Image (cartoon, rainbow, N blue to C red; front, side, top):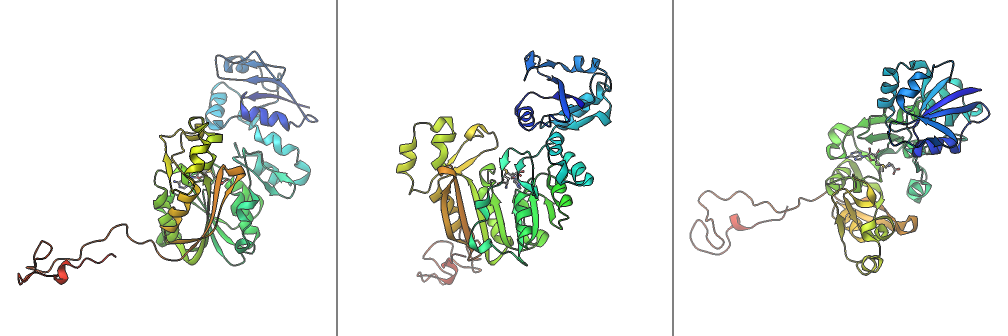
Length: 373
Ligand SMILES: C[S@@+](CC[C@H](N)C(=O)[O-])C[C@H]1O[C@@H](n2cnc3c(N)ncnc32)[C@H](O)[C@@H]1O
């Protein structure tokens, strides 16, 4: 029986407790940096870091499991307190011990090395990652993406890569694309345990371009646009990397869900309903749904208009998750047109005002004919 200290008393600790490998591990105590920590958590004492450092690793406990998204900082703090590196592990490693019989030692070590999983998905048959966000199978349920043999797919906002994995399983050659480096998330572990050849690009969707990143038959853009201050720039870049006729699958928060998920919209369901057909987006200074990185929240009609004005036709547009989110399947039908006309160069000597020309004869001179481009 291994004796554990668990550093963290928040959501991650609760998650680990729900799937704790009781047969092989017991909890001696929790550790918490917060000076206002409770005395007990789940029937065990909660210690401050200094008190934890007074316990002797190997005598009072065997392992220190870190249950926090701030794994790197807490690990460093533990090392500074003199806790030996070989006794420190991410708490998510405990989760995989329950599935050890389904994994090789190398796979177990690989999965256990990821400090924090965002996605909850079946990474290997029977083995589910302990993330906070569940894989949503309906995002890839459109008949046009049932078989992706030989297709090139780009998964923007891939994070741990559940959609990269599923599209690879369907035969696509997938590139994951995210501002998160693949080694900081579960993406690298996901591709190694599955021996996937999927590429990963760590970059901003604002910098996505065909010259650098290639062209694709399919782009998935799930859960990203509302994290952007410039969602239309992202859609223009997605259009640019798609082949003519290529598909964009787009999912995210929509205003129809606001009365349920955002405190400032509570009680305004009637208003949202009345304006449903009016393309409308809400911009908030990083507070929507209590999340600082949420900016634009369109209604479904507006999300459709964003796509229509970005060179796509809509094949499907629907509210999902009880109306809280929107989902669109769009096909590229043209390249994105410029946003405004540009005047052609004026003739040398041509007039400068409407109705004036070089001969002074009035009327419409060719230099004055402005063509939208
Ligand atoms: C809410 S998660 C969605 C993850 C996944 N696509 C899903 O739907 O479950 C948002 C993802 O978008 C990524 N992201 C946010 N802003 C981005 C940007 N400007 N360029 C590329 N990726 C971005 C985040 O790092 C994160 O992986």
